[in-house]
Image (cartoon, rainbow, N blue to C red; front, top):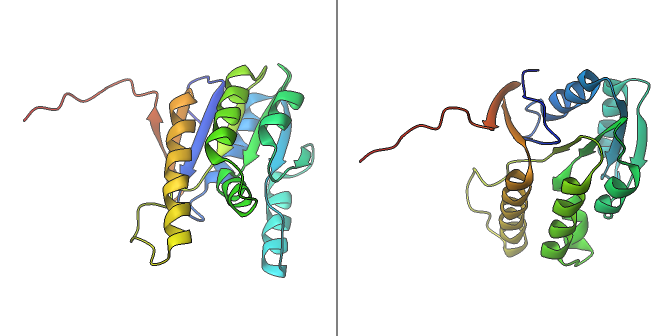
Length: 183
């Protein structure tokens, strides 16, 4: 893990790209007490199996907090200099907010504030969902657009952003060598 020391890290990428594995390693490497904030509510056997695999993958020693919507409150309450928090994942959190018809902009602003005020490091995992075709139904398009806006807001607030592709990390922020573009 070669991400520079950061207070807030956003880890993004496609499905099954290795985002959670990378984020968990960042938390472990911090040597701080690991806290896992789970935003998923399993509604079927396949999702229960995914949750179980994630628990096994993390191993023992993690405090787990299941919170589907109020993650800004969890970060505010649980963050200390001795703890490193992993929020996995913002995509499911956004789904939960949309199904609850919550104010996405207000919830995003609260999350950005909580991340800035956190006493210890926070790593957030999210999905890149807007790189494919335009969804055919309005709900899917609304979700894709909301996910893009959410990712942009958290990336702007984060000290570091890492894109995982095929299990390989690409550090997007901070960028030490900004290319000069000329036409």
